[in-house]
Structure formats: C-alpha cells, structure tokens
Length: 623
Image (cartoon, rainbow, N blue to C red; front, side, top):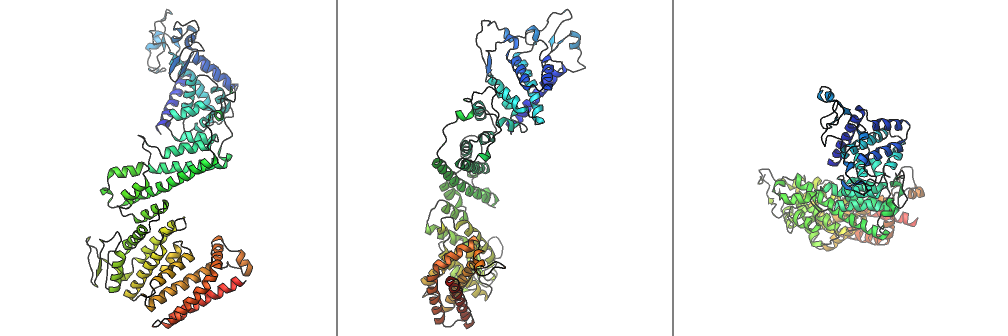
C-alpha cells in the first residue's frame, strides 16, 4: 500500500545517505564497518546514536520527540548545538574540499542535494550559514549507517539481528524509534518489526501506520488474540471516510471470530515465542504490563455470536450485490444504493425491504428470514410460490387442467404479471421469443436444481420452517401430475428425490405426504391417491435402505458396525418411529385395496413395496 511504498522510499533514501558517507570516507562509516567485522552490533548502535544525539555539542539531555525538540538546559544554552563543531566536519559525509574541487562538476561525486562544506585555499571557512551540515542531515546519516548494517543482517537472516534491534530499541530517543519502525515496515523486514515487544510500537502502529493489517498481526504474534479480534471487529464494522469494501469487511469479521476463538481456547500455537525485548528492559515496560484487562470467556463467547450473526448478514449482502451486478437491470438500480451495498454493512431490514424484495430476489429473502429466525409462514409460502412460478412461467399449455393448476399456483405469488396461455398454438412473448410449452417439461431440471440448492441452504440450520415441505410436496406433486397428464408422459417421478436431495429428513417428508393426503382426502381421485401412496412407499423404502445399507463385504453385525454417521442417525430415527410406521403401513395397504379404477399392476407394485418395507423393519428391529 501507500505506507509500504513510503517506507521503501525512505529506505532507499537512507541507502543513498550511506553511499555518500562511504564515498567521502566518513570516519563514522569506517568505524562502524570495523565494529561489524568484530560482530559488535551493540557498538555500532551506540556510536551511531551517540553521534546523532550530540551533534554540535548538543547535550545528551536534548532529545527529539515526534519531530519537536525537547531541550533540557545544561548551562550552555548558547545555541552551539545548531552548528557543527570543528572536529565534526567530515565526520558524517561532507568532507572539507578545496574551491577547485567544488568547481569541478564533471565527477558528480556529491549530489547537488548534499552540499559539501566550502573551504578556501587559505584555509578560512567561506561557507554561509546553512552550507554546514545541519543536525537533521547529520542525524539522518547516523541513522543511515546504522540501518545499512541492520539491513545487511536482515537480508542474510543473521543471528545478530535480534541483538542489534534489542540494543536499538533501548535508546531513549523516541524519534529514532519511529524512524526504525518506518524502516522495518517494509515487506522484507516487517516480521522483525512485529516481533518487537514495545508499548511505543503498539502506539505507533495505531496512530501512524496506514497499513491496518499490521496492528492485528502484532497482537497475534504477541499472543493477545482477543485484541487482534477486537481490531478486526472494529475494522469490519468501521464507519467513516475510509472506504472499506464489503469483501474486506467480511474477511475482517471472519478473522475476528478466529482470533476470539483462539483466545477462548488460549491457543498459544498461534503466537510467536521469538519476541525481541529491549536490552535495557526492566520487565514493567513490556507489552503485557500495558494491556487492558482481557474479557471473560462468557464475554468472548458473546462477541463470537454477535460477529457470526453479522457475517451471515454480510454474506447475504454480498450475494445481493453479485446478483445486482450481474443483472441486466443493474443500470436501473440507484447508484447510491449500490455504493452503500458495496462498501458498508447495511441493516438486515434495509437489505430485505430495499433490495431483496423489490428486486425479486426470492431466494435471498428466504435466507434473510432464516438467518433472522423470522417465522412468517405467509411470507415464506408467498416466496416459495414465486420461486416455482419464476421457473415455470410464462408458458403456454393446451391442457385445461394444467392451466387451472398453474393459475391457482400463480395467485398470491409475486409473479402475477407472468402469463399462462391456454392454447395449442405457438405464442410469441413481448420479447419476441416463443413461450415455453408447459407439456415439454423443459422447466423440470431447472426447478429441481433450484429447490435442491436452496433447500440445502435452508434445511437443518435451526429454521426448517423456511422450507415448507407440505406446501412444496403439494405444489411439486401437482406440477408433476398435470405435466405427465397433459403430455401423456410416463417419465420417472422426480418430486420425492428432489425433496430428499434438498436435505429434508425422511420423517419430515413422510409427514408432509401424510398431511397432503389427509387435507385432500375427498378431493383426490383414485389415480392421484395411488400416485401419492406410491411416493409414500418410495419414501419408506429409501429410508430403510439408507438405514440398513451395508458396505461391500459386510453382513450381519459387521454391517451395523460399519454404518456412517448419516446412516446411523437414519437407523436410530427409523427404529424410534417403527411402532407408528407399522400402523401407518397397515393403513396405506387398506387404502390401496379400496382404490377402484386404478391400474392393477401399479397397485400391486406399491403393495409389494410396502410389504418389503414391513419385512425389513421387522427383521432388524427383532434382531
């Protein structure tokens, strides 16, 4: 980011200052080179920082904090420290040069931005005030020499890095600390920066660092996971001038949950034990002694719950945004609203009332109701009715029964403007395309996939009412029935497998079919009733098959021991319901035997399947 680029630019500036000092034979640069050969990194730090802080006889009590001079009187407050002392000339990087050398610009040794001190041929100093090295210039050169040697160690991952940094951060000069932090705040050195144990660095990361990722990484490395979580939570929900895109907000909130969870487990594996502490540390100046009190486990658990709820809504918001952007009508949506959707966390009621419902995002509406545990049966039925109509309509049909069923299904949906045309002729819609023929059944695959996909998201998440099985069973079976009748199509029934694949439990599906048959007992003709009983027998057969299925090579007790979790749950559920199921199977058989006018082969097949289910149940329950 911009901060990283700034740090890299400053780093290059320091390298340039070091190169000038080296070219000019600076005694300071030569002395530090010798000390580095001796691996005396503490000596390098000391000599550089002492020279930087004592320019022009400047008192050691005079320090620079945050760019301002803090002066402590030492009885010699004549301003001499603003000027170089005679012995300092050439110490940093500006050697005394003769006039003739200054007039020779062909070499270009010294850049114009770094003026050398002009010495006349008779030895008198002809320089004007300002041509001598300033305190700032001398200080930067001292820092540059120190940073050069530190950078060399960092580049080669030398073992002396930690020692050198430890001595450096023991300096009382906070201005130097901040220069050090800025130097280390590059991609190459940032890991070393974040290992420094210092409340001052924590403050610097909060107030001066534009890379927002460094602060939470700092807390994580030092084992303060709840603080990392707090930073990410605030970042994810931030409100202000800084634009934070929705994707980044979701990432921040997800990290917040992870870090709070680590704090809950007191997971030390995420931390870093290789911490750099000041060589003059007394222990009380450590980060651990300057942190606020940690929240309790109950409080952290509450935080995690709050954040997870916000993540759920934010993901739905992201889904709405993706749908709008990919929509052909995207240009018609208010740009201000899209901007808010893209860069802020909006309230869930706003998401529902101003985006999902007006834009007919029915799936999203259902997911919002589920996420908020809002059990509005009427609204849920209306949304599902709209989804079914959206997949099937507009269309044409030559079947009076299909036309009547589709018209009833459409009534009360949000798709009432879509037409159902009763005709056997080809009809052109408003967009000049031919209307889909209901009888062709081209809508079946798309409808199945949508119900399955949405069902998997809705069912089993603590709000099963968002998948109204009785309504779906009745509607889907109705669509299947009138489509098969109108096309004289005897293709495989698809409704039952759709509900199973959507994730609904066998007991729920069975209850839904029983409810539909009970409410429509007098309305259903024998053939339709046989169709429902066939579906019921299929539910039971698939249930017992899943509960008592065996893996290859297994039999008997080995089969039972080899059950997976899903099969085990299915078996337990089936055994618990077995008493009621035996009674229901007897009732189903009685209804089948009373049906008149149905295909006898179909009736016999359903009876046989019910008997098979009864046999399997008795066999395993008795065992």
